[in-house]
Image (cartoon, rainbow, N blue to C red; front, side):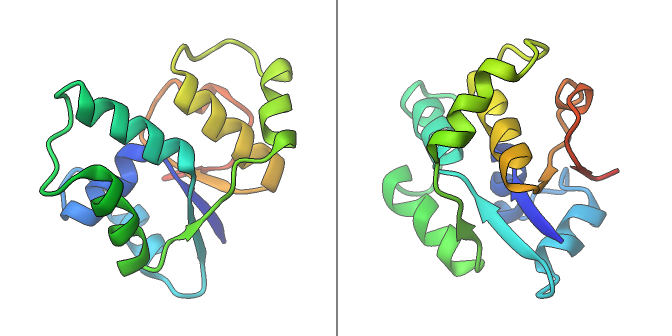
Amino acid sequence: MRILLDTHIFLWFISGDAKLPQQVQEAIRDRANQVFLSPVSLWEAIVKHALGKLPLPEAPEKYLPLQRERHAVATLPLDENSVCRLSLLPALHRDPFDRMLVCQALEHGLTLATVDSVIRAYPVGLLPQ
């Protein structure tokens, strides 16, 4: 399986948060799966950290890439085709970060790991199911 992590899923995974569904944790740890993180998630986390809404143990620009590498999560580049998909995506979700992750998942045929109930309205593969 090829999995794109939503921002909260990545943060829960690297912090060992109990909110991370067991099925998602197992899929991330399964070496048979390819696991990706978008720079969109880093952007979102850095913005939330700057606003004081996301405490992190270190500066996000150092901590987040280090954690991504430490957990063998690949970077999914933000590409033009994914951005252009935004014009075709129904406006079901107001969060621009989540909308872009949906576009990237659709463009690259990825399963999106999220617990965001609004994202479930989009025609994208989801984990947990």
